[in-house]
Length: 186
Image (cartoon, rainbow, N blue to C red; front, side, top):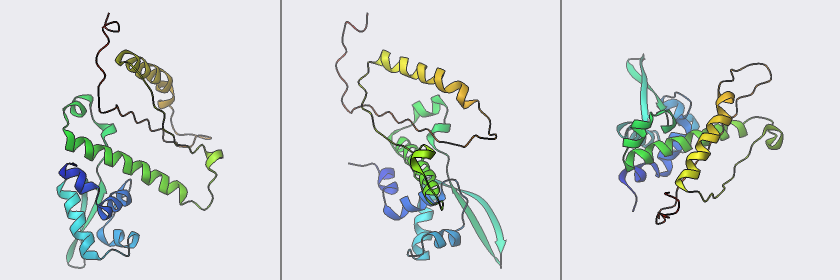
């Protein structure tokens, strides 16, 4: 059974709205140009649901021909949350954060693939899934090693010869937790 927020985000039109909004600020009219097959009344209704759920933010209101035009964007993903806020989040919040995170990745890929010329191998495009079997101690060791490896690279500033590349690591534990091995705890 999915949560109410998961149901909200898994709706095909709302998910397309979210993907269209990631990294951009759009009005309903601009969104209508991205999704011309969706009636404007439907866009308004689905957009309002996403705003009320805290998935999209209203970033600007400006007067246009006697009415107020509103500009929206996707809320930042869970990667920007403090460890305390992330740990305190409930199921619905984690579903919203993760959906926003994945939508941002989809938006990045869509932008890349929308270029006139793409060279996936030369540009370093790749995606894979690797099952890892780790104890809690091995997981902590992996986190430390990744921090040591990526720390200096994350300090790089934009410059000549440097192209922005997004590295996304997603680790999802299995639903069942193995019984503790008494030998590992010593």
